[in-house]
Length: 102
Picture 1: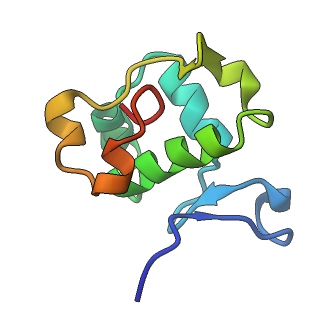
Picture 2: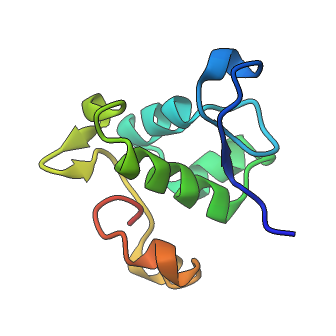
């Protein structure tokens, strides 16, 4: 079974895209990143999340830039992302998203 890490359901979270297995929206994760939290710090505060789930939320934001325009600076997501070493542990389709995930 493949997990869809970001889900959109009009009956959950008022239709706001959210992360699988949590009550956190993509917007909330982007706010955390914008306020200086790196993925490892987010995981410490929100242990129900998964490493790849955070990266998928960042990818979702990149694919929906108009919706999340306030979180981009110079074409990149604001705030700390994954370090190169951390990004190397992600699936290949997420490693290629320079400036979004990393």
